Image 1 (cartoon, rainbow, N blue to C red):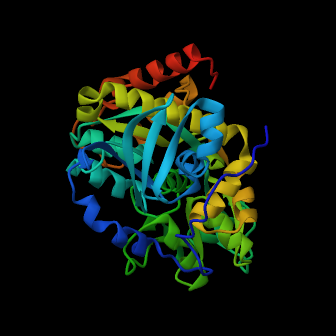
Image 2: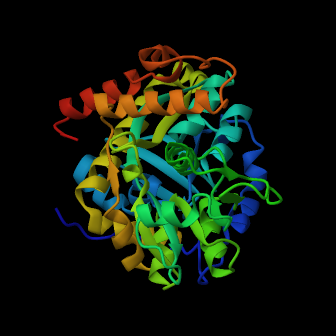
Length: 396
């Protein structure tokens, strides 16, 4: 289904090729982040919602930029007060709450806010949420949002075109290839490291380590990956779309593979990437608000997956990248609120992999398979939201 874009321009990211302005965005929002999660603007109940500046979090961008479409199609929408930051949420004609959107650079940034009690709901990296759960943060995964969408790109001038050629090029070669990562605890980094372990390729984050095949350079955010290649900081990058696709669009990068396809075959296929979370306090204290917001987000995820042209337009405007970049990125992205068996299995794979990497030392340490469920998941709010949407005549 094709729909028109109802949007006002929001050029907040990558206005200049290879230059990130995420830090400016975060700086602009620094003071509000210090406020407690439950705020009032002239007595209005406000929900703080954090997300990452990536098309992995496209549903919020699609919802925020298309109020007319969502009102007509689902009888609920976000009315912009401050474009890109502050919205009033209307559900079946009634004002439910105010939504303050909080932009971040990567999943661990979202989790710092959640741990401080500065946000109520968020979309974050699944692995980052698991780390919060392990550390005892009062948060739960309430729904999947997006799967896959992380890719591996090398500089265009390198004589390497495939994963097999990459392995042959770096393994035991003494070349010390530098690879830019958004952060050591991001989805992309965990998957890539597991693939290197499988191949017997050594790696380090210590630039003076002379023995490793790969040196990881922490670019501290997905948006900074473009600068890693543009400024010759690294020879390759791994991370979330659209930034790898942007380097290809600029002619400096080339796709090696989607990270869901790294060996061993099938381990990461269709892997969980970004998920929706909510604090336990928010779910208990404001069950009606959380359910209605879950309805809006379920509708947003549905439309994001159903109409990739609309999604590409929305992400292009919100992130300030060329639409063709987003069109390319959409080919590697899927959106869903269905915690299918395959999705759950990929979360269990994360947990086991992260535990083996000594990333857990609390609640999730040594947990395997369904042992993860009680601590990590609470799908009840999304299940109620889906049931109410069905009752209202919407199938999402």
